[in-house]
Length: 126
Image (cartoon, rainbow, N blue to C red; front, side, top):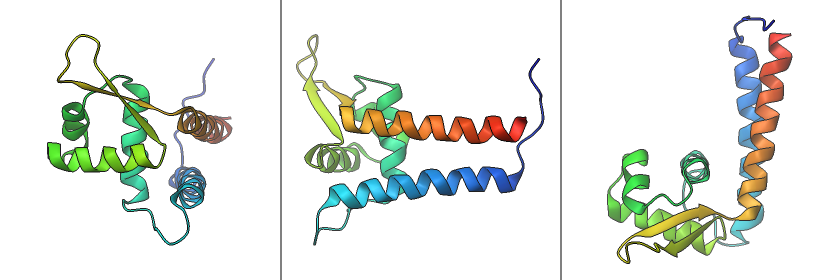
């Protein structure tokens, strides 16, 4: 039987800091020397997570999720594609549509982060 114990704020923020630190280190390793990462780490994490959970999503869908304009989403996605975080592909059914997916490196990192967060939550519930 599952214990419905609520997670304490302290445990939530410990898990959040662990995930944020891991993500920030990943971004630093992949942004290169002399070119600081152009977007906030959280915005980038949100977008990569959205694309991971909605493979094949469009630019307009990502813009709506992020609450930004299509032009802003396009610039953000272009930057993340250049960094090797996302991949753009033309839709097989609509030549005007761009489909987005995460790269294998981001897929693995997000899977690791989700596992880390889940284990932090489970240890708090026990």
